Length: 360
Image 1 (cartoon, helix red, strand yellow):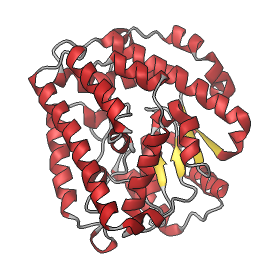
Image 2 (cartoon, one colour; image 1 turned 135 degrees about the horizontal axis):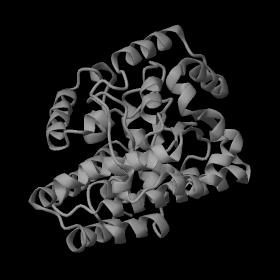
Image 3 (cartoon, helix red, strand yellow; image 1 turned 135 degrees about the vertical axis):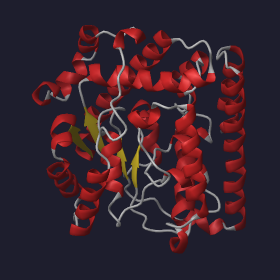
Image 4 (cartoon, one colour; image 1 turned 120 degrees about the vertical axis):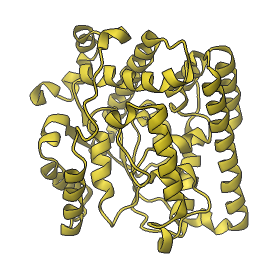
């Protein structure tokens, strides 16, 4: 299932991206890494077919738009020792599958931290936007990337033909099936199996996601779209400028505008089609002020107990990770062709549906 996306991606990178030498080397390495990971994953399944008997039951999946507090919530949830998240290091190297005895001492943790330190040199403003470590919970973008249907690639390069195919033509059912295949591998020798996942791009492909995870529950974080969109575009710019000497800021604004618009339209349609009861909504301002009432309500929604151990670990994470730990994230929305008045008009349907004005 990965071949169609691979061909479209490589063609777009060659013909549209205007990559510099660093960009060409980096994208080549990323593609080869993904293909290599697939080979390793399939080799483990070949030698241990019993892995496929693992079950992924009722995962909790975060669908909030980027820059809405979704990363902070994901990190807080990951502090609960009764649940399982994808950690940065195992997203980079899922094989060999982790084992409980060495999960917190695995040599790949230090290797991943070295990689992230290099990332901070290449993309110096990243740590102000998305502070993370080798053991932080992360999205399944890399696992989707192994099927070559992921927003990960457009974050690094201008590839309009690939973005159009991904948004409007690609079948994501095989992609999510492969994500589930990797989750089975990760939990095989390393429980717990109560998964907490998060990926904003799922909103674009919610119907395909639902076909693979029909018992999933969801949380959505919400925030004024005029603060979300320019921030995401600026995050893309930080990544693009290292890989190309011809960054098109207006295009970065356009593709993120399309993502947010289509994503929220598709989400509302899916929720209105009898799925609203599976969702728990979280608004940015009250959550940012004090997340713990919201967390208790979320656990009540799930029918699970928020233990004292989990709460104490969440408090410690929050105290050690203030929002401005690495400085403020500054940007100018106009650089990306984005205007607050027009954004509020475009996303009136979203603001009204989720009553954002009550939480401004």
